[in-house]
Image (cartoon, rainbow, N blue to C red; front, side, top):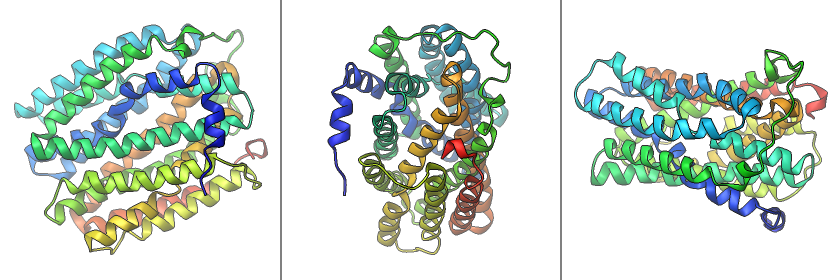
Length: 394
């Protein structure tokens, strides 16, 4: 059962409600951009493989540059980064649409997608740093990270549905331009957030040049994140290919939205109470269950059955993301907080990019079921790796 008592207590804390609300517009593209780019390129090229590679280039840009932005924020604060991204990200996506619609070479499309990802405003990392510093090790920290995961999943519900609406009413290009406008306006709005007005910079004298990567257990945690994120990417393109094979490409947004709805329910339930099992073991078990849920999607040929199984497959996704954030907070020191969260995002996004590209290859050769089977194995493997996380992460 889901209790909202902890979430109500969290939002009564000073500035919490204002911070959460101010972040929503700038993060709406999280659920829109990758899928919109995939469909934009697929529409013009007729190839899911090319669409998957273009979307993966966008995710690769996010993954490669997020840690650098996180280090800058830890050392100089977030204002300069957010202002720059508020203008660079919309410009890159607008150029991408023009290039694809103009029939540009694939290399130009990939370069623009990569630059768009590299310039996405790092509002989520700022939010998680704010939670860590405001709540410390309080029980409400789990509720805060659960709320954050639920918010992201809600964006993944709204985002794909918006993409489906744009595809049905206009084109994938309109969805990409919508994401550009939201990110630019949202980043500028977040600049006035209490999270930024009260931002403090930790001293970095004697800090390792490797940042959080030099801290014990953090690299192993990144490996776990990478493995289960590969499953996310494979599922995304597998669902998209399933909808296309059914003759209803816009159905992909609805199915991914249903999966995120299951994730929201699971995330709210997880953050509403305390759990007795050590955190690392919780993480391992959750990832194993996730693999089982994804495996159910393979062979579900009926659209209604697939929709129901999508909800089931999503149930433990937000809890896994919540546990990931808590483990990052436990493992990294306070002076590397934002960079640590961006590294975890890099692992997640790199895995999604690999999964999308690999899933596109599998779909082209063996159909959507092959992508779902591979995703299930990847998630189960991540669960096995999580059992080896250090004791202080428990």
